[in-house]
Picture (cartoon, rainbow, N blue to C red):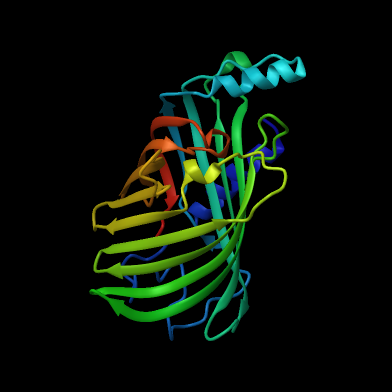
Amino acid sequence: MNARHCLPFALLLCSACATVDPSAPQTSLFAERWPAKGGPQEDRFVPKAHKPNYAIARLSSNPNQKLFDEEAAATGLDAPDLQAAEIKFQLSLKTKVMDDVGESGSLWLAYTQQSNWQAFNFSESAPFRDTNYEPELIWNVPLDGEVLDWKLRFVNLGFVHQSNGRSEPLSRSWNRFYAQFGAENGPFALLVRPWWRIPEGDDNNPEIERFYGYGDLVALWKQETCHWALTLRNNLRLDGNKGAAQLDWVYPLSNGARVYVQAFSGYGESLMDYDRATTTLGIGFQMSDWL
């Protein structure tokens, strides 16, 4: 484990130090993540949580040994013997870089890094199986509308690049434009994000949309005692329907820590496995949530 893999752990610990007073009045469930229409302006270049930040120990039903065997055959190196047990962690931060972009809009930069670490594979020196790097450029436009009792809070128009920084045959990367809509109704919130993949001449992810789908939906339920999140992806095809579902349960403790349980089933648990179905179950701690 080298220095570049230690960096995410340090940043996760720093993000855990940023606490929020639960007694402070909030007009929106999204108040801690995105500026409200007519609300106070956010400070520029101040980092804040983007997607959830967490670290879990998890089990996988289908480790992708085949890919590493193919790499070993191509390079002559030994393939690691993948274990079903891993540590998975995610770091996700964003910051506003410009105000008044369009009518009341703002420009943001975001970065998400997700790693799968074979921490219990002592015979293989505990290698990192896959790390996904995901920078984003986001134009946030606050909204103040209502549809069927759901309050529309914002739309994000974004560009996102995602890759794993590996060489062939393990290399994965793709680029997308997306529009993400945020809405809420009492303790419930929705994030709806269709996307369009930018075509590439040299495609190392054949038909990735068929497995990842053409967008995602995050349904959130923020209770006083715990938080729930359901993330769905689907290719919306009757013939060859594929996608994924992830269920998150978060239980805040009195000392500020949060117990976090994550269950995943489907394709694309990591970018390297975009075309391989797996089911995983993990438990650990979360430093920040979607809201």
